[in-house]
Amino acid sequence: MLGAFVSVALIGTLLAAPARPADAGPACVSVADGEARAVTMAAACRRAVVVAGSRTELTQVVAQPDGRMRFESAVVPQRARTRDGGWADVDLRLACGADGRLRPAAAADPAVRTTRLTVGGGVDLSQRRDGTLRATAGGTSVAEAAPALMWDSRGATGPKTRSSAATTGDGAKVAPVRAEVAGKNLLLRADPKLLDAKDRVFPIFIDPDWSVFKNKWAYATNNGASNDLSSARVGLNPDSGALYRSCFAFPTTANGVFLGGKHIQSARVEMKLDHSWGCSPTPASLYWTSVINAVPKASWSAMGLATHLGEAWGSANEAGGCNPPRPDMYMNFQSANLTALIQQGANDRWGDVTVAVTARDSGHGGESIQARWKRFFPNETKLIVDYDSVPTPPTALQVAGVACPETGVLSVGTLTPTL
Image (tube, rainbow, N blue to C red; front, side, top):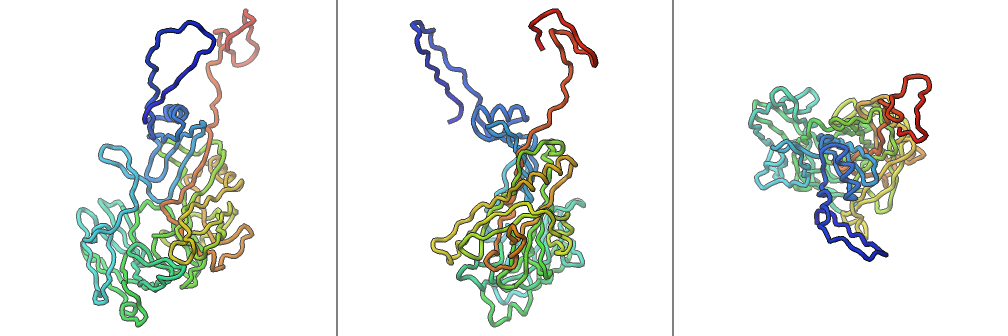
């Protein structure tokens, strides 16, 4: 029910005024125009309220019921503009339709050697030397794809995740796909060795993994191995033997709201765990790292690990290897070091903060332990900061209606002055 109702009892009185309709309280909404209105609404309705003008694809500011302001920063677009100029949450649960229009995926037929995809509208395709594909509209980059890959469906039992058109399974055999741009057409030439392999497991998926160009995260592997962007991976891949780390660059600006100059009360990085190798909780650690040097795959050597920012434990395994199954769960990385880092960024007015998630523990070891292999949802990875604005110096000071001088003492003719 929208609205608020207040009842008041008067005790010890014999006279009562005629009853009057109670004043209607503010209509409780989840988004309000302006910080002041959002703060008032949050307190009155005892619920978090988003400051409408702060919203971007990646960030927003939320007034809390206790008066705090919370800054939320993501690395994958969380919302998109609507026709009326507002914002609507991005629904990432979309499934591929029968006609295959939602994403350019996947051949499950061994006879398919070449897949042709056509790009419509005013979008143009181009390809870099490393195989990366880029889509532009009017000269502006709108999306890009890592070098195309294909994978089979092996490893679909036990504690491993299944392959799908959206993601590779933990045990899947992965091979590169030769992509060619020919005008409005994208040609994907499947790897014949994987198609013809005796131990292949159908279905086989062929997919250049397109991502919104504004994504601000990348993965790194110790041996240069490539993968898709459906998951943020950390730890030792159970089949390829590659070590994975995932790096995230969180913006510090939410439209007109900037963390620069703010007093940081607390900070945490929140991630939703999709899958873990084992059934028992294992650790992962967050580190401050360098600016991401390439997207979607960053250089392992360039993304060095600096300050340790927190450790979190978790497990999530619904593939049939655990009894009972372990559902998806949130893992929160928080520490005094992380709060201090965000405060340093606020003091120095950084435009973003870059962190890396690894399979290390708080002692900086164990990264190659198989049981620590994890896959997180990139779209559920956020930096959450509670902050206060530093008060500005007071102006137009008066005592008993008399303006205060810049220096010296002010004398007034009253013992009960109004300040």
